[in-house]
Amino acid sequence: MPWVLAGLLSSVGAAVAHHGWGSYDTSKAFTMTGPVAHLEWSNPHAHLAMQHDGSTWIATLAPISRMQTRGLTPEMLQTGTQVSIYGYPSTRTVGEMRAERITVGGKTVELR
Image (tube, rainbow, N blue to C red):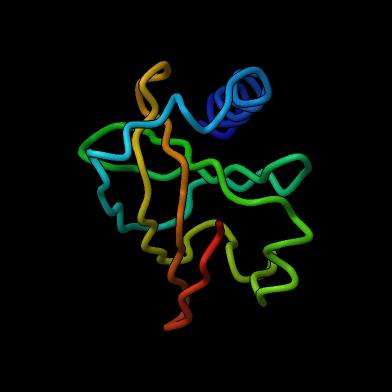
C-alpha cells in the first residue's frame, strides 16, 4: 500500500506542476476528514493522501515556506493523524483536490 500511495503522489506532483489553479472547480468545495495515509513534504507544493468516500484522495497543499510560516509542520501531519481539509476538486484528475485550509490538532491553517 505505501508503494501505491508513493506512486500516486509522484504522478500527481507532475500533473499539478503543469496546470494552474483554474483547473479546480470552486463551485464544488467540500471537506474531507480522516487520517493521513501519506505525506510528501516537498516543493513546489506538499501533497497529502487520505481516504475519502472509499477511495484515496490526494490534496495539493501550499508551498512549504508558506505552511511553515503559518505554523504547519510535517511533524503535525504524520501517518495516522486525523485531519480535516477544505478545498476544491480537480476538473482534470479524479481524486485530487486543491486544499484551501487544513485543520489538525484543533489548529486551522489557511493555505492560500
